[in-house]
Image 1 (cartoon, one colour):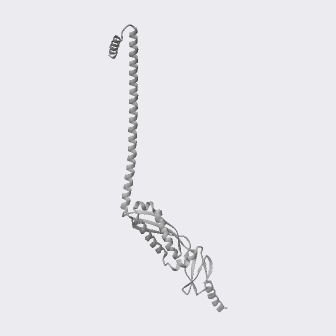
Image 2 (image 1 turned 90 degrees about the vertical axis):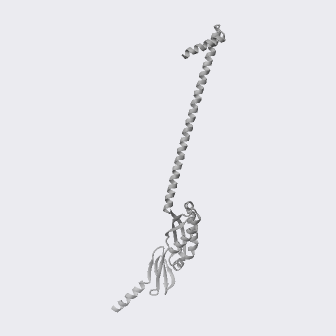
Length: 255
């Protein structure tokens, strides 16, 4: 009985060693004598004990790689670009992803460097900010084509940050501040011009009204003189004498 137990335990251990569980969105690579045999997918899997072994595993989840690339723009400004790439292993190309690339992150990083250093030197710094979507699309396009042969699919590439040299950032801040001061001065100048124009309009209107008042006053004076001459004429005084009398009267009124 004891000897039977001694044999049963190792046999059970060997049988159980042929069972393995694979988690969701994960694929195990099973080799036999160092050669690829098959893949193990989510759930309970079997392998031949002592002959088959699990060589590794591949995640089918979307992964993200962040890379910072230093390069120089067309106007000789050094700039750091932070690139974020989302990628995954194609379910039907697990073999290629496991056996063709030793380190996929290094390979993707190298491709990102190549694309960024090919695109950014064609642009001035301002265009790098404006065209970051174009840079991201170029990275995604070239990476997708290159990594397809290795079983990887590129989901998305983004330029998440653009960081120029510190001295350039200080200069840019000064330019922005100067531009804001210029705009403020322009607004202030426009306000002053509007004030001057309105003041001139008001002064012109005042003078116009003043002139109209003087004209109306003179018109009334002339009308009064004319009426006075008519009254004196009716009293038997000729026009010349009437005019002289009116002049004398106005003289005394002035005094």
